[in-house]
Length: 180
Image 1: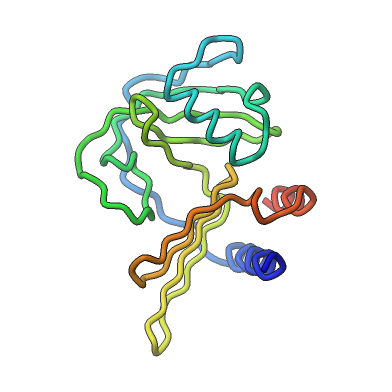
Image 2: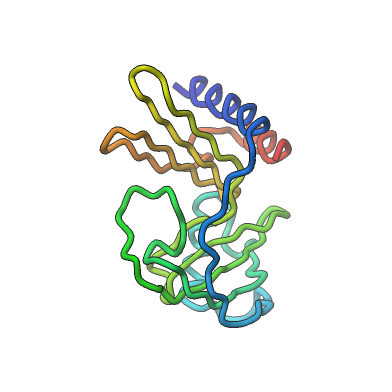
């Protein structure tokens, strides 16, 4: 099973390298300029949620993650402007934040609502899809720089969320990030 997942990830990397970049979503309204957040300052609930999420996804201690900046943003929907999730999103302007974190020498963005109860990765590393065929298949997979993976199919109930850290060794993770 592990070898099959690694093979799929490698195939996705090759396909992604040859495919055009994904198109963006509707631009959010930014209310204020980014502010620098040294690690010693107390974190807001949204920043704390982002740090804890990244820590869990990368297996990095939270105290080794730095908040680079936080921007107040009005997202176009309750899913904080992140496409591809299987849940329904209320089409209502949602105040929140774009939070940039630094871990392992890489910057990663998260989107949150105001209190950090809705959080999602925003830094896409690889996006892959295939559609067509006589049977009408459609498969989608997005790997985020923060280590999260989302996969879905056009068949109902086929949505999977996971973490790279659960299927790749440290060496494989280093090799993937080296390619990126």
